[in-house]
Length: 379
Ligand code: SF4
Image (cartoon, rainbow, N blue to C red; front, top):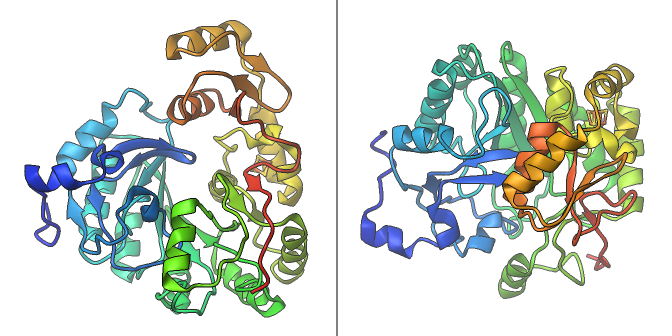
């Protein structure tokens, strides 16, 4: 364990938000390992607001890397060579100076175990040539470094300069041999960072990435409360469970981006960008949600089409029963619809079958996948 991040004691652990105490959690793009908690970067829209952890600025470890690794690979939903893995994407940035040694150590442990899973590392912080060298030395895992870039220059919304992410992405792309790098263009907020000039800057930057993924703002109640308490203008009049980006905004953005960066495809979904970068089918089975594929290059589309199969009904029924679903699942051309399974079990099913799994009680509508509707405020 690196001496820069201390392991918290039992008394401190009891004060950690219960939802952060378990370091392994299934999130949308994969099984996520988060045994280091705390971040000084202060992005106003950070998901740590949801865990009541925003004020913890100093990263601390819940356990050693080796303990976390053991807990991760023995997790009931971890499948070697199948489960997509995410490191430190819930409560810290993996490339902060004191967190970085742990990121490299975890990558090394996963790689030494001979695992070939996709591993996603998302950062907005500094990456060095030495980091790139270490990423390239990994032999087994399929590593993607996603660099979060927004182009927002209001320090109240985002105190960290976007130039840091720009430099990291350029360096990562220049040195990439065994890993891939993605421009993670987010959050896009109407009126704040979606002007033609903002889009042109992102399109220029995309020339230094294997793929681009864009998304809107995750505007939950806790984040809205922070905006109100800090006097930050609220971009929307209501909050939502899914990310926000009005359809007409999306279409304009895509039109401008594609005319200026035709050689770097842009995707709506993280897993699609990762899939394209590694020339593999989308592990989240988004191919069934056909309207998501409108920006995808034809060779990648064929890769997904070949791999995408409706699951065998008996196999699916048995899996649903073993996970505790209510009633029988429904299989459509787009997704499997189940009832009574929480997110973790639905994502486990999704990655096992390579087919979207939706909750009957939270229906997805055509052309609204992962997109919430809300009225924007004029900023
Ligand atoms: S074909 Fe569709 S599902 Fe596959 S990577 Fe492209 S956008 Fe994603």
